[in-house]
Image 1 (tube, rainbow over the protein chains, first blue to last red):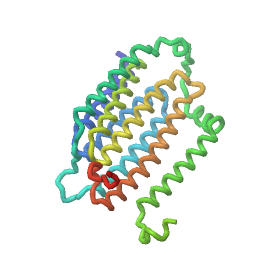
Image 2 (cartoon, rainbow over the protein chains, first blue to last red):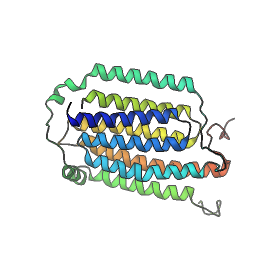
Image 3 (spheres, rainbow over the protein chains, first blue to last red):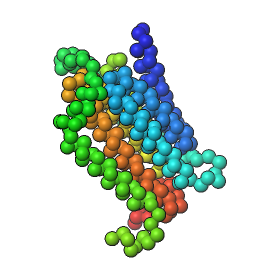
Image 4 (cartoon, each protein chain N blue to C red):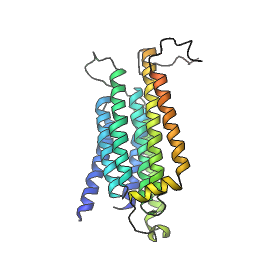
Length: 175
Length: 100
């Protein structure tokens, strides 16, 4: 077994196990930390798939940004006098049933589609992609989408600050 | 690294995210499930992008998904914090003011 496969299956196990922990744990804070482990495992898989830039972005944006936001959100939306930040669980039977059924359908479809033996997959160029290629593509072919997504991010951040910010005169400055 | 293994991992993560969204009552736990589902989609995009080393469409789309997920998380957390200030709870079952 080559060393690359061992690393791949290690990251695969990390991702799958921590995702299962999110499903099984009632404590929201533990779920958030397990989500960090899931994202790190996924970033490792991205690196092995030749997408280094996406992996770095994943760690920067998710682990460095979104998870910090979530931990702050957990802190601000739970009474800290409680010993544990636990969530109630409901619809347990139907929720698990629906997602298990969906997983069965998806697994069956993946098995039947048999992507790995398709012609265009076998004839695919095996040249590794580089970060430079990705940057050239973003700045030439996809530059319009890049700008639009930048504006979306700006609007979302302004909107988030406006919604959560401390507005003293709710009624007067809303217009 | 067989492609089918990665696709199965993506499907499993999506279903776990769906189960978390359906079964949790706390709004932030639901958000955690949504992030898991978005990432499962990213995994599929990057996995297929390996067979497309010239155009790189999958990787670029994955980057855009990450950006939109960041925007979504920021706005959603702002709304959750505002809802908590207003209703004194983040339990989605108790926020039923619009129920007839």
